[in-house]
Length: 402
Image 1 (tube, rainbow, N blue to C red):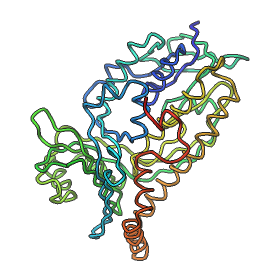
Image 2 (image 1 turned 90 degrees about the horizontal axis):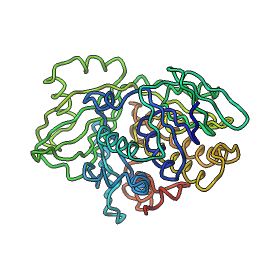
Image 3 (image 1 turned 135 degrees about the vertical axis):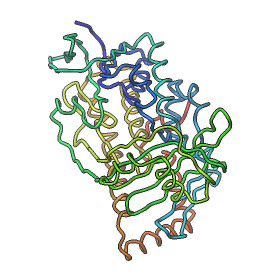
Image 4 (image 1 turned 120 degrees about the vertical axis):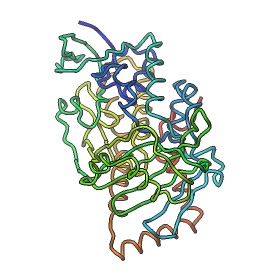
């Protein structure tokens, strides 16, 4: 039997970040991951990029993580929003609100590599990889976690960070709201002739949004951007199987001449899109965070950012307490995070619906709305602050960096 203060189930970006923050506080933490670092370091394990908002950057700074990823992150200084084939556009400029940027685009592999290094050097964290959980057993003041190799861990608190198909959530018998969008996100990286100058393009289309996100230049100075192209579910496999020339032509058509001539580099990947929202986050000495609690549509690029808000809230709640599994503390976490998460889940869900309708009246309403926002300074400022992750009931670790 191995004893820990806190056991984190899941060693993805959220689970590793949570482990680091709690380890930095002095808690004795076990982070259990079914995949090994070697598996996750493979070039094709996860080729996605992630948008780190201004608020999330503050959290990573406070954890001393951002300093190691900053040189491999590209700032989003402008956001351009288009609707179908309309010339109507809405542009957000970070300079208009005296902000450094709305966020930063990072490669998931780079961020994961940095997180691994921080976990390895933190003496308070035991990283158990290639291990899966088979059962949980509750006692009066702890939970016993049994792994597939029969290792048993006794812990005061279990944090489930094990994704949308969470075993931890299932054990907690938590009900969820689920929706399959019948959409798939195709992701890849492109080279292009013209510099992006920090521009993120969000082009809303009936089949789903098409996004071009600014990425760092390669070692030769070639301009690069990341593509997140949402297609209807039945079309995804044909786009994955088509020739690189056909795929590249489709990307070029959707980019127009905004980035000049483009070339797809590396591999492409497909991610089915759905939403999973837990109705409650807490049971006896167990709590779920991140996508175990709320997996949402990527239309606004807020998935990991909402997860990091969860992580900041738990970290602040557990500071200077004697029992991390105290039920009142865990309930305060749910009270802090539930409304914020529900709001973002519903907002992304309805936004995807709104831009998916091809009826004339709905198109006219959308374009009227874009026009209105572009002409109302207070409305533009609100949406820009929202994009930065600078609104709502924010944990202190999100509000400001040390």
